[in-house]
Length: 171
Image 1 (cartoon, one colour):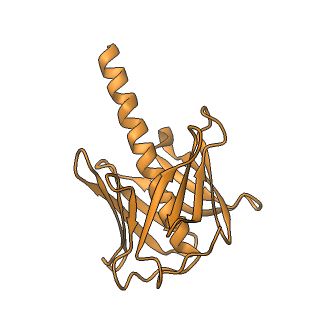
Image 2 (tube, helix red, strand yellow):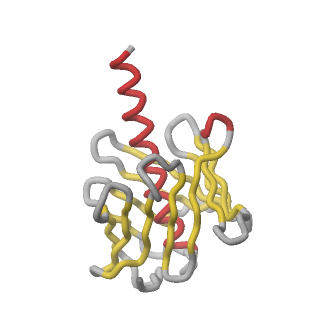
Image 3 (tube, rainbow, N blue to C red):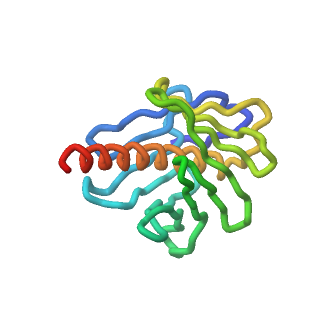
């Protein structure tokens, strides 16, 4: 796995890894991050980059939010509170705040916006890409975590929608 620098990473792709439970972020065919579910039935994911590892799991009332936890200290790194439109607010322990939102129906685009209103990342489901607009101001450690969490949230949203359709059709 190689480190990822915001200055170099203008376009990152993501792909499913072998099996049913993993994804990876690639920059010029080099792996820069991984997201995997330890088992098909697990409700938590393990995320990793060149420099760090994290656990991402559901949290909150009726599991409506998520949290990112350091696997060694078990201390929260960030918490996510979802909103009724499918996006939400990701707040890091250092009080840095990002908004996640999505647009589109069949080929969704997930956008991550800093507290200042600046778009720092777009994850496109159709092209399986993560785009960083020019001037995106993210640290080398925050960048892969934010991309992996956005991918996690996108996957969870798709899973929740599929479950809702299944419940609706069997009722």
